[in-house]
Image (tube, rainbow, N blue to C red):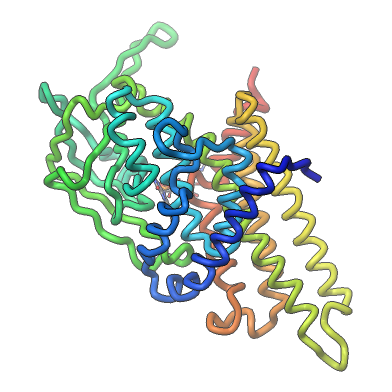
Length: 383
Ligand SMILES: Cc1cc2nc3c(=O)[nH]c(=O)nc-3n(C[C@H](O)[C@H](O)[C@H](O)COP(=O)(O)OP(=O)(O)OC[C@H]3O[C@@H](n4cnc5c(N)ncnc54)[C@H](O)[C@@H]3O)c2cc1C
């Protein structure tokens, strides 16, 4: 078992209390309507939950990765969509800006990202063969293209856009190899014309999370909004995604925890033939397998977060944690649904079908299971 210090225990207790009070009562309605309740984001800003990874000097909490994952886990235990809104904003956007942006950009946006402005991270292309391009026109870049499945896109104040800004040439085995030069640009939505953000409706899970399709039509972005060096966009994205995957793993652990708790309490309260179903070995086997996989997922997630705090290379352990935890969450939620019998498939009776739908989507976001396996294999097979 993990040896938590007092501060870590307090952070978890604080996040749990917040999630139980502000998030849990709204979760079923948000899921049913497929619409995110802005009041939850405002409450998260107010409580300081959107600035957990923003350094203290910019008005955030500057938490360690290990403490941060406990907060994500507690939010996800009550509502995975809320945990997604918070974790993309935090572990991808605020971390990228704190780590790579100029002092001017940091000073200008980090205090707002900690207290009132929502960030989103626009990497995925609608059509990878036609990536979003941003042409250098002197004092600005002009961006055109379509980004897809962007969390917080429809409600974002600030978007980190990854776009092709040119072509780089390098030599490999005596041949000149051309590659897209990808840069990160900060888009201030309020002061931007030519950007259309629409909500992607009809998701099977994480239904409430505001996930959008962003169309950039000749959008002008000042050159001063370049985040990090020109051409370093892909490298920076991969760097923060490594750490972001630990947040995604924590999200999965939170959903799995909610499902296991639901399975346990239903198994104890449901009586068949004069006995609670928890007395049946078939039910016990399901609970035992689910609890074991969840505990393993949790251990891997905390191990990855601890490695990040130590400054180790985390790309392999983070991919392992994301891969294992998201698949474990689907397993646990599926078993929890089975334990609930018919009532498990009825949305208005028990939340387990929501846990199942949410967990399944977690196997896709922030890199599919296949991509995590490629990362792990790449490390294991390195010559
Ligand atoms: C709810 C939700 C929220 C999201 N939020 C964000 C966000 O905030 N920002 C953002 O940029 N993106 C976001 N995404 C996008 C998400 O990260 C991608 O959907 C995911 O990484 C898969 O990319 P894709 O959809 O382009 O699938 P594709 O890359 O087209 O993959 C299709 C299939 O091919 C497999 N595949 C692809 N490449 C390989 C390979 N080399 N080897 C083996 N198999 C391969 C994949 O595993 C998958 O099974 C979100 C997605 C969802 C569903």
